[in-house]
Image 1 (cartoon, rainbow, N blue to C red):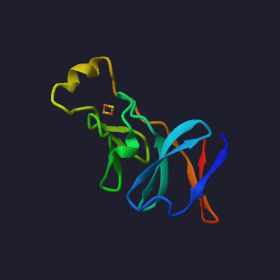
Image 2: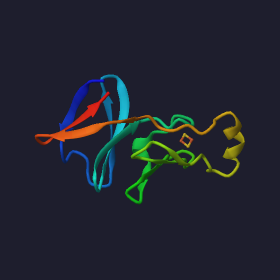
Image 3: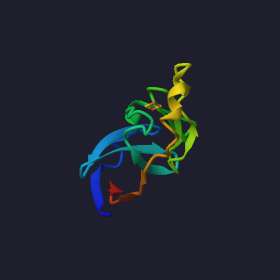
Image 4: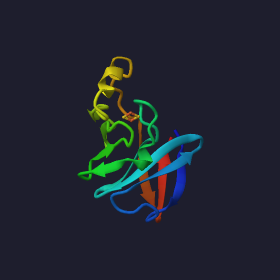
Length: 115
Ligand code: FES
């Protein structure tokens, strides 16, 4: 793993996430109440863009495509794809899968992601 400078603290609004290409890996960096976190950028269900998802309760990201919800801090699935009704049929082949997560740190006003 190597530490990559992705930009100044404050580039991401509180309660929001932003997509970055960090050394060829697409991630979303989220700014929650207790700091910054990073997950893979594409939903493991069908590649939905998590940077366009909703952040709920200072804890979860909801995929914009079929509403799977993940715990941002751990990457664990909280609810799997459930929208629109009927999408669950696909879940036989698209099984639950957690997000990869990456350590994020702040130093001297910059944000770093370890990949
Ligand atoms: S692509 Fe994310 S829930 Fe389907």
